Image 1 (tube, rainbow, N blue to C red):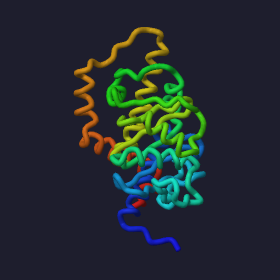
Image 2: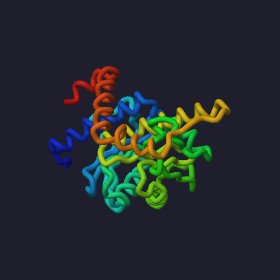
Image 3: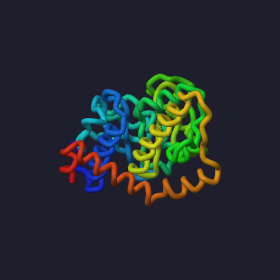
Image 4: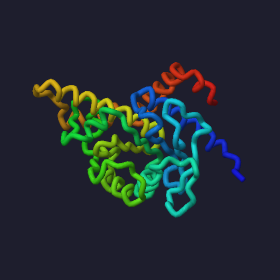
Length: 243
């Protein structure tokens, strides 16, 4: 028998559904591929968007329970890449949320050998915080491969998956979602600059540090999340009813 959800879990389901719609609006759709998950930091369980449901259509009822321990039973509607989330949560007790998507510019950037430069505010966010995983471009179906991705992530904020998009983490759901948007834009802008065939400027070390402290502070991230939620309510009318 399924237990009743706590008020906190119900709110997390709503927030995950809103996060899904935000990711869709910001270019992370790939049919029903990609996942977003969240937990209380350090918790042994997390909630994740179920399989066969896209970011653009996810609702609060589309979240299923996952266990960090891969030996625990797997929900029948859990996405195939559940091991990716299990491995990252196991390796990083500080992580409260994970986004994995096939956002197009992030995917293309990860297929190149380019290093992400602080061309924009977005690129500055990830300086010294972005890993690369190039052992395979396959769907991540095993805990061993998930653990390899977690090692490539290290103590960073995101990892580029070769020919497979990106994985972005946050201490909270709003941080992970905002950073997923930021990474996609950073990759898009640098690919655009590279396409000119001309030299282009990047921020200094001092400017990067300033941007990381101010533009991506906790207060700023909350304001970006709040803006994204307002936009999601305008684009998807039903989001406003999830209260």
